[in-house]
Image (cartoon, rainbow, N blue to C red; front, top):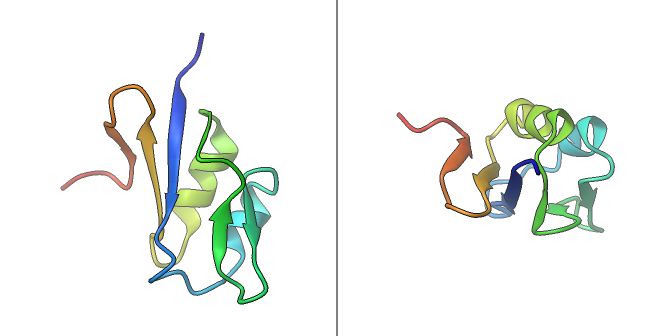
Length: 77
C-alpha cells in the first residue's frame, strides 16, 4: 500500500494562477473567486499532486504524509 498525503491550500496567499488545476485537474478546483482548493483533504501520493505543489508560484500548497504529518512539500529548511 502506498503513501497517502494530506493536502492543504493556504487560501490567504493563493493568487489563483490555476497552475495546480493544470498539473492535477483531479486534485484541485478554482472557486468563483479563483481561489484554489483541494478536491479531497487526503489522496494517494502521486506525481501530479507533487507537480502542482512544486509549480505553485506562491507555494500555497502543502503536502504532508497523512499518517505521520511529515512534510513532503515544501521542503523544510
